[in-house]
Length: 127
Image 1 (cartoon, rainbow, N blue to C red):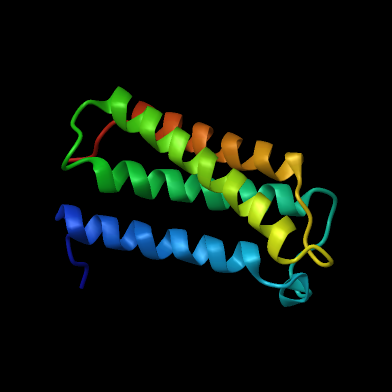
Image 2: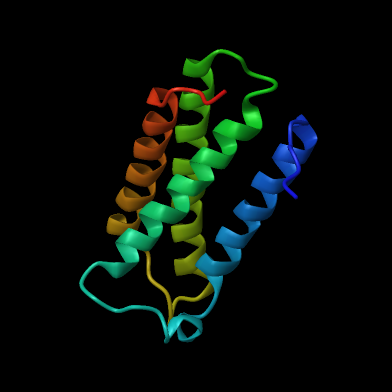
């Protein structure tokens, strides 16, 4: 049975949990990911998807409060981009011998958040 989640607080809670999971994954030791696929730029694809999903969830969470789509999209892209940059800085500061600051990861984060935000606003609502 699917439950319709329409309340602002419920949506924000789901988005918040996902955002915390991004932090946990971003700040975990690299040895935690030894079984993940390893091909050229696999991590960039993962960053793109993670931050794209974060953007989709934030757009969804903000819908009951901010009806103006332009405002929602701008806030979403700005927040997800800033959060991605923060995670990269924290990786370098908290685990300097294990994780590194990567401009490529930041670009993938911003691209994922931007692309999926734009896809979401272009899609036709389902009835």
